[in-house]
Amino acid sequence: MTVQALRMLSHDVRDIRGTPDEGMQDDALWEMAQQEERLLITTDKGFTHYRTMPHHGVLIIRLRRPNRHKIHHRIMQALGQFSDTEWPGLLVVMRDVAQSTWHVRESH
Image (tube, rainbow, N blue to C red; front, side, top):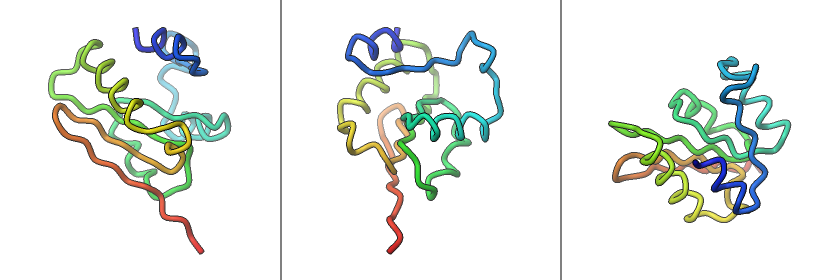
């Protein structure tokens, strides 16, 4: 559902579900996303600990009763709020009715 919608919007999507990469360790997934310069979309709140590191964007969906329709809605809502150029360094946690954002501070 979400993968097809993103591809229809011309996004280059790499979905690891149902592939040999599914279940890979968080550190390996993080490294892959950074090497490929991808926005990482996940339901794993463990990725919040990367919020102070330079990255290409992280979107975490945290819902009380998640289902694919609710997750899809929050992903599309978040992607509609920020342009492609705003995602690098941005971590967004979308909850049922609220969201939190962090932006990596540039060191000078």
